[in-house]
Image 1 (tube, rainbow, N blue to C red):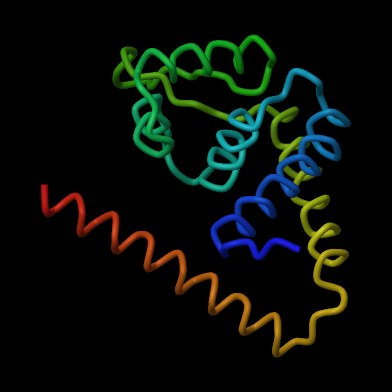
Image 2 (image 1 turned 180 degrees about the horizontal axis):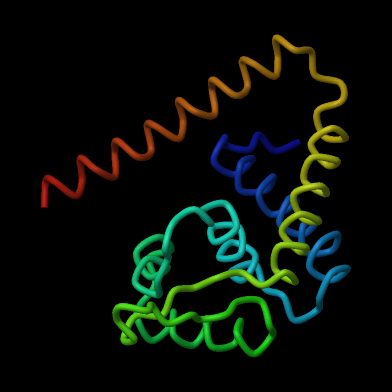
Length: 153
């Protein structure tokens, strides 16, 4: 039996989780829904106390202006978002999730909670706590390396 690297194992788990998410969420809810749509919906719903514009989406998701424009236009056509002009400046269009998007977000969130219970059902509380700590350390290490590399350039 081959001994896989940690990187390979993490990538494999990510693939399994992505497939399950697609099968359980996107295909069930709306065949036209993409993962990018779901991430944007999540961002808009969870930040509904802020005014969010296309530029915020570009920065948050690291996408170009043209890509953001295309994705948001399609999301508007799918009735997932609406653009609302600001009363003091019509040039800026605030992005708002529709009720359809909020319902999708709530359904995905519920499915994720159900899946977490299934995936971690044989983990003790101590193991879960340790696992979360280790994941945070890994994430912080990756971020720190990236920041260091960017400052070295």
